[in-house]
Image 1 (cartoon, rainbow, N blue to C red):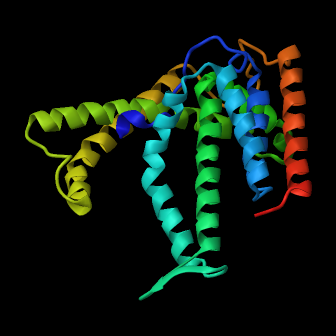
Image 2: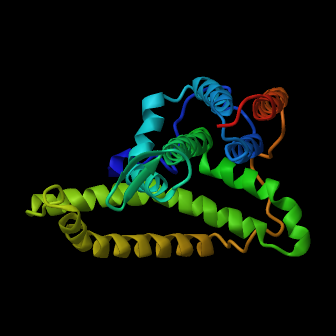
Image 3: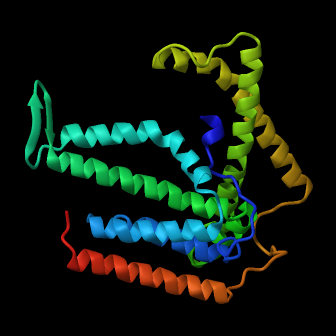
Length: 270
């Protein structure tokens, strides 16, 4: 499962999505996530599916690579679906025995919620897989730039998010190495029930936390050695600028929003 986590990873390939300005991708991803909560109809999900498939094909990132990241949230997804199925009592009753009562409205809500969460994860993965951490930091700092007027430390917030994204694949690789070392010494992470597997993971956490703190200390010392003092007066080696591709991306995004609003307005909401 550790190898299946794709958050924070960058997939290097030349594609129209990779060449977009990071601010365009940030705004597009945020707009797509918000749009998922604007509708609850089959027509809306068809429009969102067409949009997501188009973006994935343009990114040239293998679809299997993106789907791999869903394995990490599979348990959360199943639990959320069960809660919706068992706790929603509205609609026609399909099954009613003991304390279990399943309705058609509960099944519909669970199915739509699962699709919504899946699209949310895949849509966010497209942004991280097609944007380097440096570009993502610069784009986030630029998008949040107006907040500097009310004395919010935008640069520091962007820097922290960039460091967190960079540390995810590093810590996953470190976890994989520690697991292999402990398996070679007789540790068992595969057999047993869920509680036993959780107990077997406890000896893994101590060396992992020590490694994480050591890397954080090394990073802090490296930043101090280079006289890092925040974002005030800093310049960028690669200034951000919008191009023709970004204009086309915004037009495509507006067409998607118009299609979503049309589907919500004129189609039957489930």
